[in-house]
Image (spheres, rainbow, N blue to C red):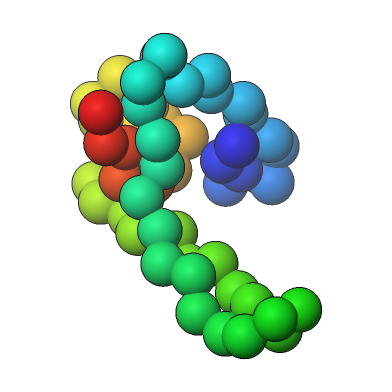
Length: 56
């Protein structure tokens, strides 16, 4: 899910086998996930200029 400039949410499905790359840090119940981003694909650039890094 990404929000555009007007703060409207837009949901995008992943294809089978795809995953969003991120980093989990912390211990026990005190964990955080940082999503790694890259430039948005041209067809989604209207939503936001950065995009989660999607791996196959």
